[in-house]
Image (cartoon, rainbow, N blue to C red; front, side):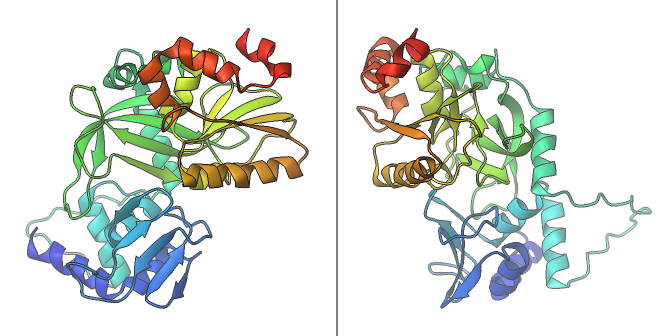
Length: 343
C-alpha cells in the first residue's frame, strides 16, 4: 500500500460519520455506530459501521458488518457498493472528492479525457450482466455441476464472467476472478442488481478468498427469478439451494432471495395463490420464513414451508441425490399441488 492510499483510507476513517451520511443516508447514528439495513441503503438495523476508535487495527472506526448476510469491510467497500465504481483508481478519486481533496496532478499528463459520469449501482449491475456470457460450457457450469446441479446452463437469469473484479477487506487492488453472475429483477422483470459468486480457477468450488459472494444494486424486495411462475411460487435464500429444487423437480417455479434478510422482505407477485418457502435449517432462515409467511397470509395467500433434512437443499441433493430429494419434497407439497408440480 503506498502512502497516499494509506492516507486517504485513514482520512475516511477519521470522517466515518460523514461518509455514512453521504453514502448510507437511510441510516442513523446510535452511540458509537451508524445503523442501516444493508449496503443498498435500505432502512433497517442489520448493518452497523463503527464511528469511534483507532483508525486501524482491532476496533477501528470505519469498519462495518452486516449481521444478516455475514459480510464486513471498510469505508472504501461502502463507497464502491453505493457508486458502482469497480476500478480502484476511480474509487480513490471518489474518496478524495468526498474528503474535499484535490486530485493528484501527474507530470507530462496530456489533456485529460472527459470523465465518465459516475454510474449508479443499478447501471453498473446492468453493464456487468451485459458483459457476461451464458453459463453453459463455462466455469460457472463446472461449479454448479460440482454441486450436483445440471440445469444452470438453461437459466437466463444466470451468466458467467471470466474476469469479474474482486477485492477483499484490507486489499488496495482489485483482482479479476471468474464469477457466476445472477440477475436480480423486480416484478416487471427490470434488472435492479446482480449477485456475484467468485469461483476457483478450475470451477470446482468457490474462490479461496475471504468474501466469496457480494451483491450490487437494489436487492430489497427483489429476487433472482430462476424459472417462470403462475399462481404457485417457491421462494428461498441461496441460488444453489433453489437450483437444487429444480434439479429434483424440473419446472418448479423458484426464486432466490439471496439472504435470510431479503427472503423476509421479498415482494410477492399479484395473483399468487400458494407460496412455498424453502428454508435453510438455521434460526435466521426460520425467522425469515415467519416474516414472509405472515405477509403472505395477510394477503390471502396459502403458505407451506419446505424444510431440508440437512443444512439446506443443496446439502440434501449432494448427500442423497435428486430422486431422494424429490421424494422428500413430495411429502411436503400439498396434495392439491402434487400432480401439478411433480407430474
